[in-house]
Length: 239
Image 1: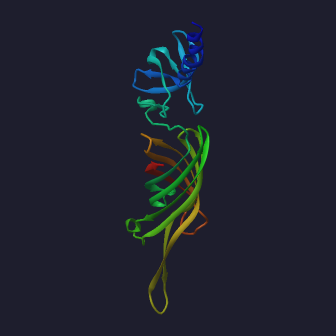
Image 2 (image 1 turned 180 degrees about the vertical axis):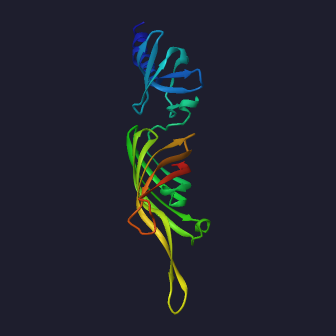
């Protein structure tokens, strides 16, 4: 009998403790979302709070929950499927991305590289180079570029400060005298842009970007206004 007790103490009890340490709380919501972590607060029949491994805390009403279980720990942290939280957030909001789109941060119609650091609050850098189809405005095509910084104030939402190409100008000078003619001059204008937008991901890799803002035009005799509206829109791939 003593041998059996000793055997239980040495082998069985540690196995039970180990198994418990490798379990986590899993909440299944009625909308199909699944959240994994540790339940840190529960008000019976009212609400529940769960903290994920990356320290994000989510609160749900009991009527939103379909069931709660304990399951073996996996690498998948949480995913959302309802319209209000449909964008997938990865384990940590640190990533490098490549985007294809149109706007100041894409250098016109072009390519953008970006790196994000932090979690809910974060920051990042980006650089873009693209092509300006100048024929639309009766101008020569041009290569645009930009670079800047983003400040993420809540997950995907950010404030973007960019410097680079913000506009094109064209001037035609007419001459009178012994002969009549004109000289055409055109080029890129460079200045800062300020935008508010977001980078949203539909899964672990693919997402979209959108932003609105204003570009400040440098002192230039070919433009009457001092600022113009600007946009960003594109598709991004995260690594």
